Image (cartoon, rainbow, N blue to C red):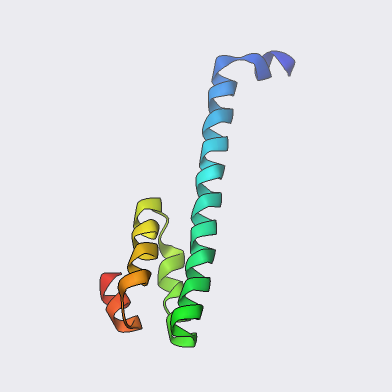
Length: 82
């Protein structure tokens, strides 16, 4: 088992797994932050967008939504951007 852990393949697989885990954690963190932002800005109507947002796994898209929340004036306006 020790030889396996030292192999380059094992190390590469381990690094890839760690990177994927970090990305998943960051995605989840942004999604949670978006939920809080939507609740603060729009109340329950804003939270109705969360099923759509939880489907999004792309970090850049989630960050764009985060920025958009700052400038939109309504849930419907944000829904159109999604």
